[in-house]
Length: 207
Length: 234
Image (cartoon, rainbow over all chains, first blue to last red; front, side):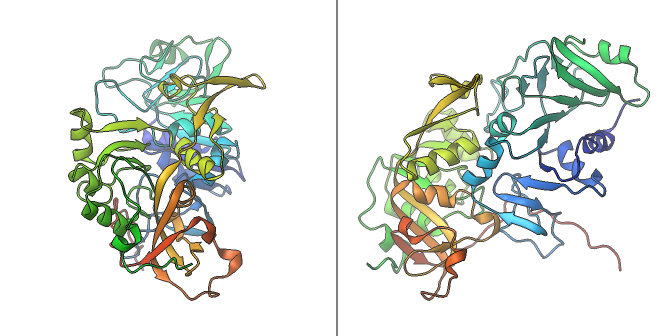
């Protein structure tokens, strides 16, 4: 019942349209690149690259060519490089059509928390705050509930925010929900999941 | 004026003082000024405030300056790869100012362009906005961020000519140009100093006006996360 990681990534890839410039976060969002099919999508890596290619073949790693997760990658025929100020200029300036990223919590008004848990080791927000504030569309891909079975779609976030009212769409293992006036709206149910099951697993208001 | 120096130590001569503010290029371990960091360690200069996206790893990059306790404060966006960093931070020995990555880059770029502050949407409604001026433009809130005016920039480029025109390579460019722009003095280390006229003027990434001192040297260029794919069977 519901979608697994790859099915969630495949569903997220359906959000992307031909010609889009897109930034993918780490975790499930990285898998989205495997499901874009024939669509002409350009991936941005916020350390300073458009047109990110796949991992290199063994022996062809280049220390000067990494993604935002510091992993070795490759370039494509379309690739361009630029500095970090230019990179975040295009993010802040709304030139990147969409960001697909993971989250710890999303609130019904679109608040997003995904960078720190008080009392635990704080590593930093990296580029997450810039991305959610700047890109055209923020799509969250995450499990519907945490490991204790509690809803990650909340009336209000309990964790420190990454951005306020920034999320547009949420894709979980149970389905697809949009942030709309007054709460979240169920757009689609995952395979074998009913709307009632989504409601039962969600703390946020469903309109 | 001669910009080329014989070693990192010579290139930093007369520029260092305790309590100074340094802007460093690099993202993770990619494009970091390895040789200048080593020379800073050797110099013993201390109580440094360092603006750099990351703080190296244990025993490499800026991590070396942590091991010797020469850094008082970091201005960074992500510091997760360094156990000594966390130890010093949690024990109160080290101050940390988190900056969203794009805000950090723009604070450097802005200062280099003579802009002491700018308004940005990034961080509105988060802890980053605490204590900062909020202003509404066209019905949307923005927060005031200030330029980073550093005493010294330490930068890594791929190639330079003797006038300081720089070319970077692939994603090793990252924070290097904005870091180079925001210091009173900018010292650059490169893999190769090439003959004047051999770089295409249309392909210069950072003009030599920003560069005061240059050294050439060998770089380790350590890889932080080696990820590869399998070759398909023929």
